[in-house]
Image 1 (cartoon, helix red, strand yellow):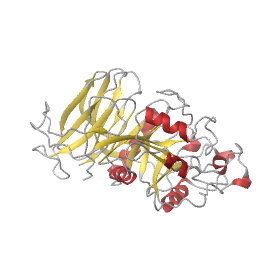
Image 2 (tube, rainbow, N blue to C red; image 1 turned 60 degrees about the horizontal axis):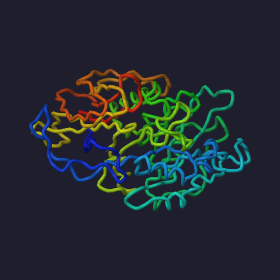
Image 3 (cartoon, helix red, strand yellow; image 1 turned 90 degrees about the vertical axis):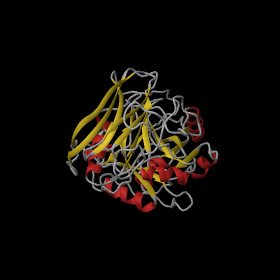
Image 4 (spheres, rainbow, N blue to C red; image 1 turned 45 degrees about the vertical axis):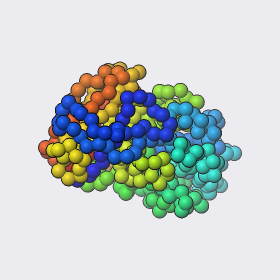
Length: 404
C-alpha cells in the first residue's frame, strides 16, 4: 500500500512561510464522527520548473534571478528551482545559436551562489537546477527525446562540476539524459512527458525517474497534461511510485497570472509540499515521500487516508478524506474522487495511455467554497481526486494518490 496522506488547508490565501494545518480534530458530515488531528507541519508552495535570463537562451531577456525571486515571493511561493536548458546555447549568454564549438561545455549551474543569496532562511528558498534537453536530429523533430528536470537533492554534496551531454542532435536519448541527471545526484523529473511539441516529449527509454510533471504551465490543464496524469496512474498501478508535480515552465517572469498558452505565469501551476519546516532537506523529503498537492491560483485539494475509527493509517484504509477549496475567481467546479484499476500502457511507444477508472465520489463546488468530505474505500485500486472548473481548466487542483 502506498501511503501519501497528510495535510489540511485554511480558508484564507497563501501566506509566504506556509499554509498551516489544523491543530485539532474536525467534525465532518460524512464518515466517522471525528478524524484524527493532523500532524505538525505546513504546506509550502513552490515552482520546480523556471527559466532565467543569462542561463537560458529563450527567456526574452527579462527574467533575471532577482526578478524571479521578487515575483515568486509576491505570489506566495516559498521555493523556486531554476531549471535552465543544458545545451551550450542555454548556458552561454553570448549566443542564441547552436554552435557546435560550444556543445557539452556548460556551465550548467551558473547561478548557484547568486540564487542561494536571494533566499531567506525559513521564509524563501531558491535553488539553481537544470533541464537536461537533448533533441532529435533536424530531419526528425517529430521524434521525442525528453526534457529532464534536475533538482539538486543535497545542496551540500551536489556535483555541479562539468557539463551534461545533450548534443549532437539525435545522438542522446531521453533515457540517457535521465541517467546523467540521476548519476549527478538530481531529484529527477520528466518534464511535460506528452508535450504537444513532439521534440520535447519523453521517449520512455528509462523509467527510473523520481517524479513526473503531470501539469505543465500554459493553458491550464490541457490534453497533454491529462495524458501525463494517466501515465502517472499507470506507473502507480504497475507498482512504481513517482511523485506527481505541477510547475509553470515560466520563461518570462513579468507575465501576469493566469498566463497564456506560450507564456505561462510564474507559479501557475505550482506544487505544494507538506513538511515540518521550510528547509531544503525537508522539502526534498516531502517530495520523495509524495506529500504534495498540485494547484493553480487559490484552489487546493488534499487527500488523506484513515481507518474505520478515523485514525490515520497506512494499513486498513476505510476512508479517504478530501479537503480544500475552489478559487473564488474560478467558475463553478466539480470535485471527483477516482479509482483506477487497470492501464493500457503503450510504452516505449509514445501514444497516449488508456486508464480504466471509475468515479467513486462527485459533487459540485461553488467558487470560493471550502469542503471537507469523506469517501468510503472498500475496493482495490489507485485513488486520486480532481477539482476542475466546469467552464475551463484554469484554477484547478489535483491531489496526490493513495493505492489500496
